[in-house]
Image 1 (tube, rainbow, N blue to C red):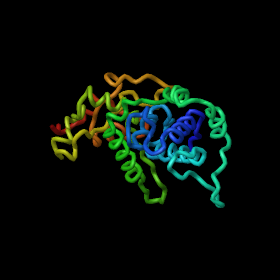
Image 2 (image 1 turned 120 degrees about the vertical axis):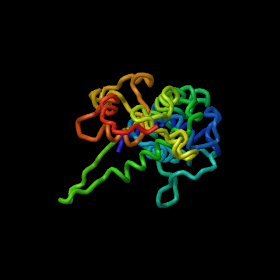
Image 3 (image 1 turned 90 degrees about the vertical axis):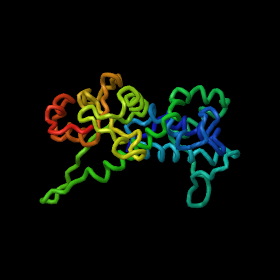
Image 4 (image 1 turned 60 degrees about the vertical axis):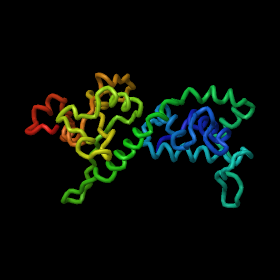
Length: 247
């Protein structure tokens, strides 16, 4: 489990105190799900989207009983009393207790990307891919051992959104386009691939340019690129293996 840090609880405090019914006005949305997504890019630390949503909501709920204007019922213990704040959540509460709303927002706005609300369909696609990977990527061998196959897609929604805007929705390898085959059901659907695998960064953060570092490909080609462990084919190498091009 990924440990939640100070910035995570600062955002949770802000959401709880100033989101009495709907999310705080500064976030420019009436959807709590979108409100959580606004902070995903900076604070996710590798969490899957649904895990991040639940974790941030739980952290927000932990503060709810301490703000009488909030119309939500926060976490309580077995006796019905509010769960006591401790650790980082208590530190954040004490830090912000005498801050104005403007001062709290100045602090947490550093973690926000308001533009996220304009590409919520990207989050829906990413969640669908994450959920499909959980169901499909566990195979059993005859000896009873489980083999886990992981195909990672670009999970920074803004980078994914930019890559799709730049490259379109045709697969860079075979030309397949989901909308052309499936109509509205396939609209705005594709996978985004790192041309240089993240694993080669040796766990160091790096800048990603969606124009030259990312490619749009279909699910089949994505899996073919990563089919063999330790080998990631280039777009050109996989194109060279095509027997039939789908367009």
